[in-house]
Image (tube, rainbow, N blue to C red; front, side, top):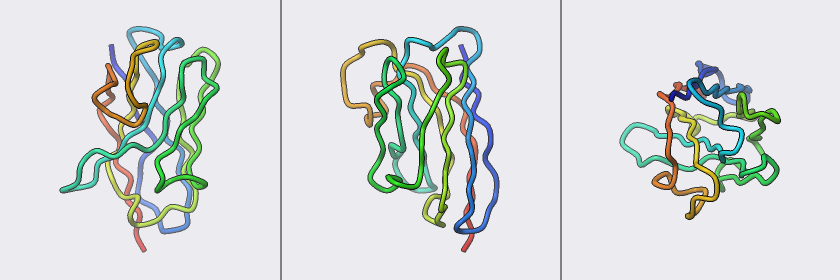
Length: 125
């Protein structure tokens, strides 16, 4: 079971990037999917999640209004549209899957069951 994150890169502040997370080995159409990020020397931070059923969405305070999480109906892939990027958004971004109706906060990384390898986003000023 793998989650393949892609779409990272180096951009200027104010630019946009779109990250993708594509599962392999199984389908995640009943899973909640989330994005987290980790900057050097910092703890892993919640970015966004889409809940079971693909309707409800959740965002970390630092990205609200700038980032949008979405996915196709079959959860073949989950996307993170990142607009108005700032230097403080620089981090390795990870996608993760949370099995159906597992308890705990969507923003808590320990409640997720599967993780991708990460994709680096660098935003320069």
